[in-house]
Length: 212
Image (cartoon, rainbow, N blue to C red; front, side, top):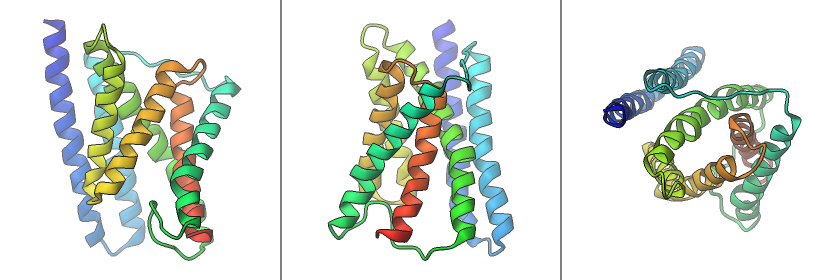
């Protein structure tokens, strides 16, 4: 009965997260930048709230320790490695996997730093690497690694909203890296992957401005 409840809540939460994520596509029709930014932040936080509510309903807990400095180092190493492989090297070879060149802007730089480090990294990692990964891992008791693969697959497919199949594939790879890092590496916690994810996205902003 407990597992059935967990599956039902998982399905409902996935549908709600999908609806919220799809609604973000309509933000492109908003011409007021401040309103668009506010709406984007709210929608991301709403996804995090849905995951938190689902965890609460299924008695799942998450340990958060901000004092362990090693977890930030691990996150930074992951971010740098991913950025070099996915963003820097392809850009130096003449093509980009992280989007087109954008002109330098202090506002964009600061905004992206805050948005990725404080919103995108923490929220997406909470949804995927904490709620979804821990849920799927609990379903595959004898083959827990399958839970990581399923979660990474969903993470990749979730990015099909952007309409780019290539991004889906390498985002699946990123999901595997972050998922197995959290699952296998000592001191690699939710804080590690949240920080690493946010830093990776911000580094891509820098690559688009100065390398692409």
